[in-house]
Image (cartoon, rainbow, N blue to C red; front, side, top):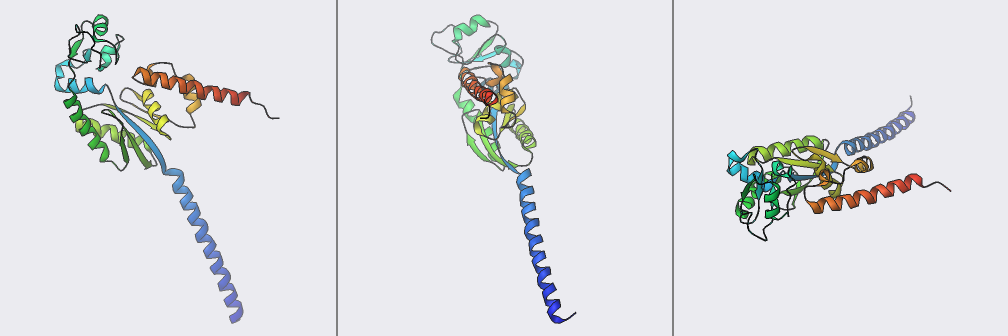
Length: 246
């Protein structure tokens, strides 16, 4: 082989090697993009105010607990701040007048609101969430969004729930979504003490079957807004199915 032929073959080999490096790099980057995605997690504490009160008074566990105002259901112009799940079985919900709550569940334990205690418990929860490799956005005493980049958002949510329970003694539910709206709605399906994922892939299927009630949120305003969104998106999906080419 002459020097000229050897040089030609060497240049050809170098071009092939550069192409292989570029192609492998693109494949690797594409592979990483396919498994590490951006997710939104909505962390919502279960029956937060009632749960804080039960932690302070363990003897109330399993009993219907109603928190609001001065805790006196005979007083006028007092409303329910929150109710334990046991009280909710009697139709008690946030915003209900205490007098009506007493009529609906006279055997419930009525307690006055203690904002300072709830603020302290909330701070502990949020401090726990900020310990994760995520962007945290506090949404209230009992809610927060986490922006995470992970290949397994479910296991991330499991870790979040476990850490909150271990550090504060409070149970939480986590909604996973590709947007904040879907993550928040997913939490309604996760409650209580669960995890649910709602994305573009299962949005129409899930929302078309969703009830017009509790699975879409604890608060009446959350449920009304969720129902409006569900109807809007399902109608859009139905129109898409009816649309014909041409």
